[in-house]
Length: 431
Image 1: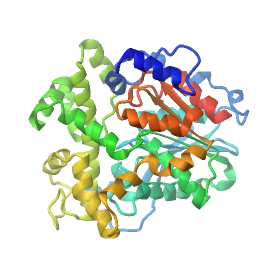
Image 2 (image 1 turned 180 degrees about the vertical axis):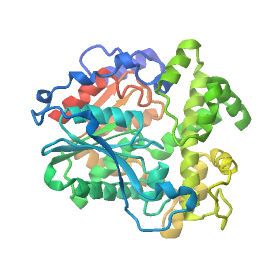
Image 3 (image 1 turned 60 degrees about the horizontal axis):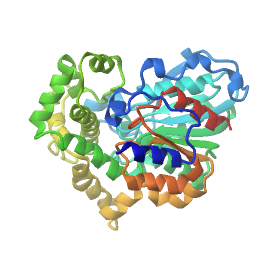
């Protein structure tokens, strides 16, 4: 995108920051991979109780606790025995306080780097904070999904909503003065749907909702991420070679982990030691997405016994190598998953379901009237976010108008921890 167009879009943003924006990575793929350098992160020790509502003294950040919740009494495949309960984290104030839910992005857990950082920020600012994994994360698929077939936003959001309600009951509603919500990437999209669902279910009555780098259309954004890999490698062999060259001794971790966290010390060191081409950056992002998708697909298939990855009727033993299954799952694109796995399931449960209906129902456009009228919902995203098309950006501008903060750089979620962004988040929630 030309610099003049970037500048024009930035000026036209209805809610843009007043001062110069100095986020350092101007290439959106570099920003997506590297995130925010530690020196540019919002300083946690700058938060004082009076900066929000004089609610409580600063609480000990050691109060962050990982917890488990049994939501469904049902058999769990032996290979996934450790995921039978929903895992989440909570950081509580000593006294009555507002609560903020944080919803992780695609394939990410409650313990992702962005969740941990936001939890620390808002806990210091006087909130109870609950961090939840994405419904596309394996633990959520096993423990909290009613169908164990993720990817259809209305059902995923209903599962999130039930999980949130159960967690609040564990905390105690008498300890909570109000409810707030944020999420990043797919978690941002789901936060919008959660707010809409709550107007009907009325269990929370969210005061403020912030969507961070949301996808407008799940299928559109997922297809873009898929193409970052498929358009830049000849085949899976080349993809494996390029990734191995980039991460060398850590390549095994990329193949075997449920989540690839790019914004860590390893990638900062890699970036400093040699130049990474834009093509390599795109491949890294595409590989990260494909690894997360593969974990989700494999987990769902094992839970349902659908026979999509593992042969129907085959029980995977604990000591059995998972490599053949994961290799097969990595070859599945998101469109493959939708057309070959998700849609047949949706059509089985609802014969009137079509591809067009399913895609539309997983887009923010399906709840556009609600979003236009909901003054408590705001969006923070970037002009150069690679998961958004020009039409997507146009939709966000028309729909949110003065509730849209549009930054000139940051890629996809690369600037979530940047000092200006976090300051704007705190300002939004305190008003």
